[in-house]
Amino acid sequence: MLQSIFDDVKRMNKRQFLYQVLSFGMIVSSALMIWKGLMVVTGSESPIVVVLSGSMEPAFHRGDLLFLTNYKEEPVRVGEIVVFKVEGRDIPIVHRVLKLHEKENGTVKFLTKGDNNSVDDRGLYAPGQLWLTKKDVVGRARGFLPYVGMVTIYMNEYPKFKVSLGRRFYSDQDSKFNRLVIGSLVYSESSALDHAATKAGSCEN
Image (cartoon, rainbow, N blue to C red; front, side, top):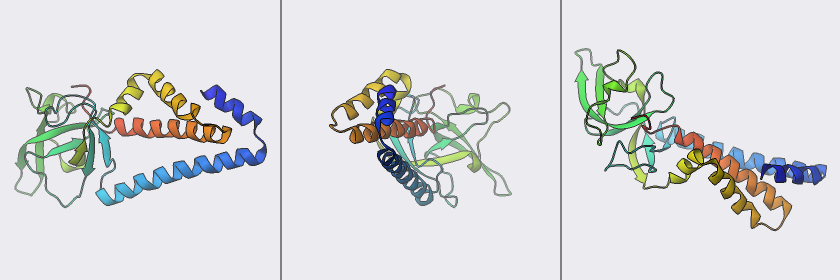
């Protein structure tokens, strides 16, 4: 697919090539603007994430798309589902708050656990870490769409699926312009989904 796109680029004149670059730039800029806008509205650095494992079943399943908020003024509560980062791990984890530990100075620490796990998450935390704090939280689950994120997971685990999806999108187009723009859109969209997929889950549980 990429070779075919490169061949199309070589056959374009300067005006066509510039038009393609501007079109692709608008696609990327629009996606970034939407993402940044969601970050501002939700207060979360990752407002949309994909669950990568079954550790939260039956509440959430592998492939579910979660919508997060992370308003700093909201207290952490026992029973709510949070996405949190752990030092030394690239992929954050989505689990439920199991216990709260509040000190006299007002500092709040909490312990998490996957609904489908038999033990709490202390084995997943950084060495010597027994509790999480609010600074570890990426967001709190406010809603979800079941299995919508499975496309992302398939793209990550089966690269040929990503290529075949791209081919299906652009092979139905008649013109070289649509072929190049749609092909670029598929790859940029899959990259955005890949990024979302790495933002949540507990695939190492």
